[in-house]
Image (tube, rainbow, N blue to C red; front, side, top):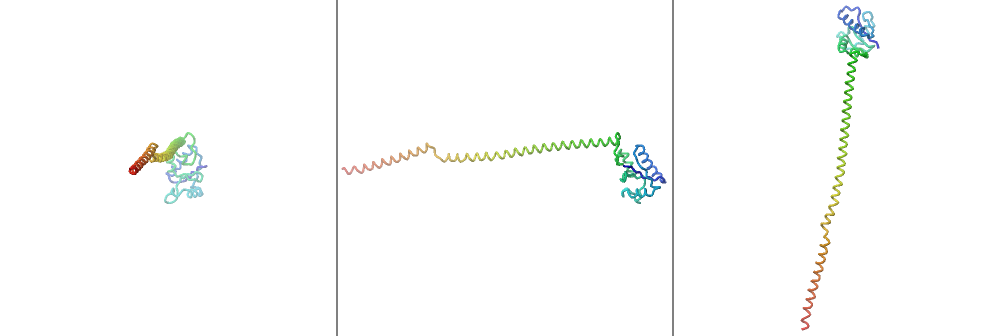
Length: 208
């Protein structure tokens, strides 16, 4: 991947020349490979740059001013975007390149990865806690179902005992039955004796 910097070497604008020199000097100082594309002496370069700069980055007249920076055919940005990326130590990300070891951008990237890992670990811990809560909830539901199954058996047992008690209340005891039978027998004997006495009374006047 090659960084392309579109510049106008014969520009009459001091501000443009200064911006171009700052971009080129920074890339050279940091040993970042790039190609300097002159739009002043090459019409094809000028045409390609104008066609590939996004519309929102073009000025009102539609003609983007150099320097414009590309990574192959991917647009990176203009001088303002380059300057902001340099100030935030994210120039390699801006250029679409992997930062070399030991740079501030690498340290920043490592810190982001560590933070991301910590967030993932915290998320995993939260998931484990959630799973434990679900298991506890399921165990509670199973216990509740077991209690519900036990209650009908207890009620059935109570219902079975009730008829026996009712039968016991309705059925007379053996002592009561015997007493009733003796009373009936005694009554029959008394009636029999009364009849015999009556017969004797009737018979006595006939002899006289």
